[in-house]
Length: 110
Image (tube, rainbow, N blue to C red; front, side, top):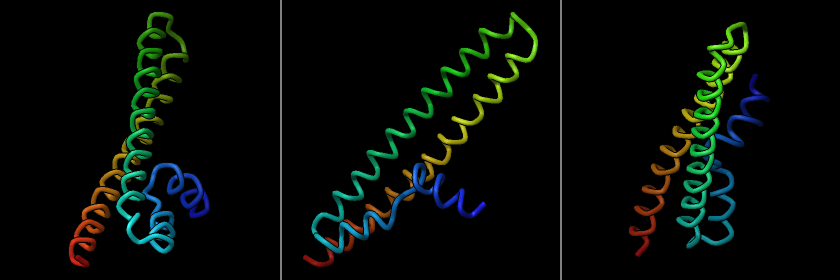
């Protein structure tokens, strides 16, 4: 589980702290830009996950008149992008918090 979490969840839906730290090590003034790029990346992931959830939701609604197992399959598939949306929103919250800390540290250096 830890390998899956580290590789998939943290890589795609989490705030990549190591990326920001490596940018800050090379160019300390670019730390806020690295945090902003992480916020933009996670906002895109959030938007794409919401879009996928809406598409699967529409497919679920469209499949209910047909009956059978298909609507339940689409309903289950709707939950996956909804989970990804929640993970990406958590990453955005962490990135915004890190951005505030980076701005506070930059103001303290001045």
